[in-house]
Length: 418
Ligand code: RNT
Ligand code: ZN
Image 1 (tube, protein in one colour):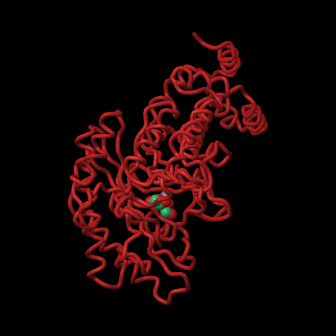
Image 2 (cartoon, protein in one colour; image 1 turned 90 degrees about the horizontal axis):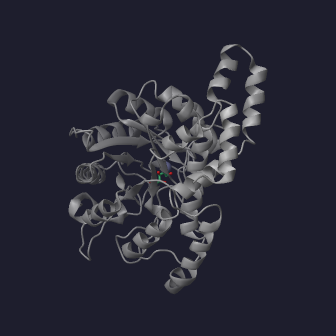
Image 3 (cartoon, helix red, strand yellow; image 1 turned 90 degrees about the vertical axis):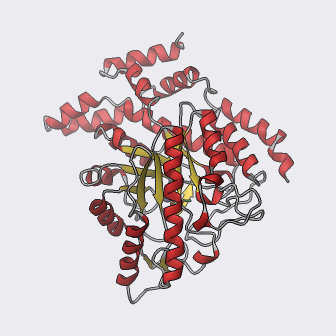
């Protein structure tokens, strides 16, 4: 039984040649990879007092109730997932290893430290994506990892990368869906370097060593993520966009585009159709920079919508892995997950509901007046009714009702974590 509002919306869209049922069908096939690190401000689980250090990234805020261990993180993830329509994935960082009290360093990690996560995902029908962790570690404390001057430090991080790819392949195998392993490293200088070349040469050699072993893409695929600048690496980042674009094209890896990793007026939406002409697939870190790479909660704003529009218009969804990447410690962390994921999905739905045929016809005919007029009229079409219908069908709360659930959880569960 459809809601009356949906029935009306369906008619409105049909008059513009848009099939809302087809849009909803498509929407439920697109997984969003939910990043575990929103749950605890990128602290991880390696020591009892683990916290984010260095790495050119920063979580700000001290909202109470942060997950203090893996059990709490999983409990919080379960709650968030129950409020997000559709079937999605979990994006895990290696610093969320389950060490069971043992002292194991990152270059020694094996599947054993992640079997708990694999089982957890299997039970819930979630795919799993993975990230080696090149920060919050003594050997990353001076801001360099895979491009470090010291061969011993580089070797440690190469071994970490190799270990993570093996674990990721096992995740993909056990869960029956390829794992996307994303490599992001913080390496860079606060102040102007004299030698920009050597660190990049070392990074290339290190990556070649990490990726030397071929892995069946049915189990694991690798992505590399660039960045313009970071906290403490304002003047120079080894893994710049040009560096990784070149690396990905040369080596056939995926390229990861993070929405917060470019100049503030630059949009990753415009990069998608260029990049996909030269690399087989991309990974997106859907994020929101506010003046800088601040990793604010994703919104269904123009920037996110532009990204989703490109994926739909260019027929790129089949070659794109969508992940979220933000960490806001100033609001309820479960709400942050839910807002970001629901808004990414809303932006995608808006793109799927575009009067695409009419728009293309106008553009092809050189009628840019009609193109502009239709694009602007599309903004106020009744998308909300279609979104609500999707939530009803997917058995998740409609509208802001999910917030009552989160507030209740805050009172009954999070409050006890003081
Ligand atoms: C950092 C990158 C990277 C991280 C995660 C935690 O600027 O965006 O993706 O946010 O690996
Ligand atoms: Zn990112």
